[in-house]
Image 1 (cartoon, each protein chain N blue to C red):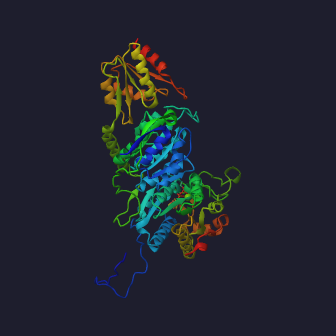
Image 2: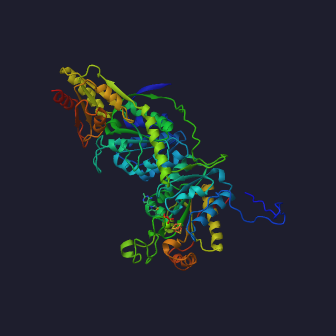
Image 3: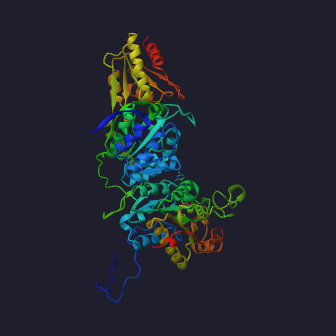
Length: 265
Length: 352
Ligand SMILES: Cc1ncc(C[n+]2csc(CCOP(=O)(O)OP(=O)(O)O)c2C)c(N)n1
Ligand code: SF4
Ligand SMILES: [Mg+2]
């Protein structure tokens, strides 16, 4: 999309050029997310990647049930709304039917690590050629801030009002580490979406997770550590600090599995 | 069409019928008494370049079906009662998102883990929705191995026509029994309608497609429901049934599936004892042949409904007949199969 830059009199201004645009794969619908939420950021990054790889015409995206339930409104690709947690099974149905399409799921931590844990593990075990964009905000955002499997020890939520107690609710599940023992997985990485630098790292990881599918290596997943200022009861800036200070200790960033670089074409 | 008559097991006939009916993708999880369906398809599908996936659960199976159907393919799953219960959320999504697909339930005894013996205890679940919300599946009830072979194609055809899930409601006897059936020798693909709504990648299309069952705005969801209801009203023309010896009958038996086979034998026994009994067999359980039953029951002394359940379809028969003719019920549960002589005794009791 090219935005013509005009002078005040309406004639084209040759001295100015557009340096930042909305990706073609992103619709012009305004995001419904809360201020300071990273769902919109991750959507944009995915759309950038679809543009970069030239996949607009061959992509089928699967949305979760969670705050990103309306993700089908925001992408210009074909989209399917899955039931809560089942996106990897839906993606399997699409990808097996149409192996030359690019198929991605977009999933929250309740969606992927609670109700949908079975589906993601078995999609990984089968080595489904799908790409998973996983948003870990440590909470059930959509339903009002209840405890998720990824909630930090001591974190207060609406179903752990005194803070998460490991004796009765266990420890946070580290999805990437859990999946890393599965050989069908081609790529796993985790990154906090907290700074321009980290966002650039995220882009790098996303490229590999996409290549894992396009180059027929296996399942690729990028987990972003994302703020939910509203349900955490924090200001947006404080929420980002909280990720960089505390969340990364429970969820260490980095590449956990990379079978893509080795097979680089 | 080249075809041969072969001694065939019901579940195997169903699997080959799915192949002949143009099934592109099968997703399933093993459960008795339908295991031959995934077993046969695990080699017959890949042989033809089609998709077979053994899923990790029935929840996954139905969601894989959802994905493949959304991608525009003829997709199916097969299971038995407890597995079908697990699929119900997915079936509701498929109905709301208006995707065509085929679901097979080879019923077994319930509730709970129940038994692996035949039953017809899932009629309510199949015909009255089963999952949440106001929706229906088209429900087909075969009564012999030939229909086990033919109904997958019919199910796909109706599902495509109405963009809704179709279900084949069979039972453990039909799955396990062997009978001669005419099986096609060729693999000629059936005519499948265009699916311009499919989320198969835009591929040059100037707009995106969305497959969705979320309609957050109340009037929007009301309107979507009205659209679904209008579709169910239109579907009523697909009602199918069969009658045997009904013209001169004083008592009308109504039964489907394997119970109809037994009921027909019972009618013959009753006739030998001087009681003219006839049978109406619903072939579609949804839409239900209410009008045909009313017409057929008119002037008869009694109606006797026979089911392998506590009495589920009998409710629809009573609703249809609306008190005009007395309706009796005979059912067995838990995998107990009544003999034609048992049913004949009920006929005699009813007409006395
Ligand atoms: C079967 C089912 N169970 C529960 C829900 C309610 N529900 C909707 S979203 C959600 C949790 C979402 O949390 P997460 O996946 O972390 O997404 P977030 O909103 O945090 O982005 C739940 C429990 C549902 N829609 N369906
Ligand atoms: S509730 Fe949390 S995850 Fe949901 S939109 Fe708001 S900030 Fe984002
Ligand atoms: Mg969450």
